[in-house]
Length: 245
Figure 1 (spheres, rainbow, N blue to C red):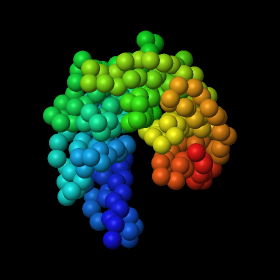
Figure 2: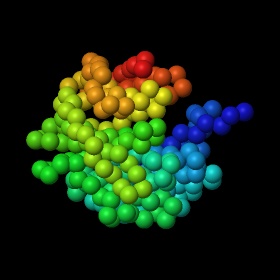
Figure 3: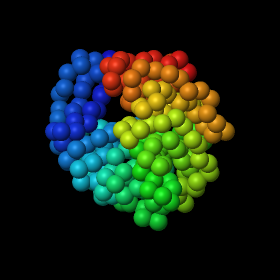
């Protein structure tokens, strides 16, 4: 039978829980560090990555035996992450230092020359998503005390090249660290908690296709690229929404 594993970052416990997707039972809890936030997976190498906000590290877990293996310092306030499987890299948003760092997961080292800042005036980055088809990275960041901007980068071996900037509805100051990416359609889903909507970006031409009203404070989002469905949870209305892509 097929085996489905779910990894959950437990912020207060400093652990990542491993759940059997068939039985829905927690069968392991991995100590990773203070205040883990978001989890990303490199399916090609079977490595799981989690950001620990409390000490600013990126931690690696071996998906074969669910053991913590290596870690590397990203920066103070490390928050969100996106995985580039083709280059074996992980991009991390650092809220407190207003930057995005690139981690080489072959050597598990930070590539200091490839750190970028989304803007020149206090650009606090939050959510991040990577489209593996066209190799573009999307970073939401705070501008003028509102989360209303998206920085678009082309990712390559030489680093991140800024190619566009988009304006989205207000995300406030409480936003997720991971964006929804559908590589099948090329759509990027960005929740806007302060505006009660989800913005859909077409990553082929970096245009906003839709702004979809949802329940109170849309926050977490994930996409099933096989069924072309996006799933969004809303914080204040306590709902799960499905958006057919």
